[in-house]
Length: 258
Image 1 (spheres, rainbow, N blue to C red):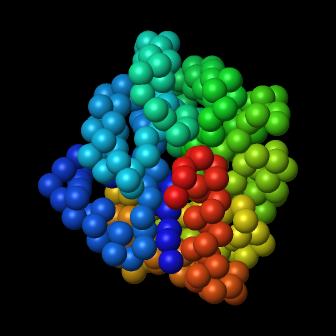
Image 2: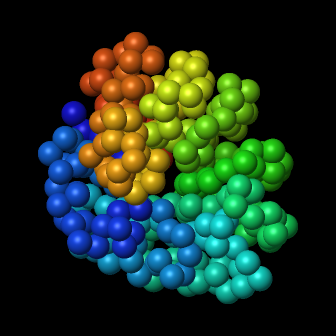
């Protein structure tokens, strides 16, 4: 079985001492590919250094994370534009709106989000959307920008059935399911029960959102297997099918040739 960790911060400093070992452990379980979302200009070199060191398994994205949006957002977006001229990227992300930590820059977050959606459409790249406490604001913009050229994934999905249906209704979007689906009181398992496996990507968001039974530890790509097993259990389909279909979903979305 081959798996894709469709959202991993393996470039983070938390992995500076054992990055190669973490990737090796994941590969031993079939987790062969890792999609690396950028945060802002302070992380761009880390993302590229990691993908250059692990060319066969790590694939970089470029984008401005909503929690990094401030009054300097224009310079950050210019950095995204510049990086796209000189490096190969597989998507724009992670981008979006975050109203959990701080609402100060909501209007600027909206501007940055819309700009990056338009950029992705222009370049024919998928987007990775961060939507923490912000589905209404995200939907308002995507409803306006959606067309046949827009595609991507709503990363770390924790929404309702209705919100899932709204996303799938766009036509080009899938949802990323991570460790939260294993949390006893999250309620996400009940929403996943009504999902189609063809619309799901697996992700860890490592080093965050560690799944049960490893919760409390640093998250790693090898723990994707717990998420895959949980989805297999919820949907009542073999683990092999979860691996095959979610891997196909990820590779096709990010245009990665196996």
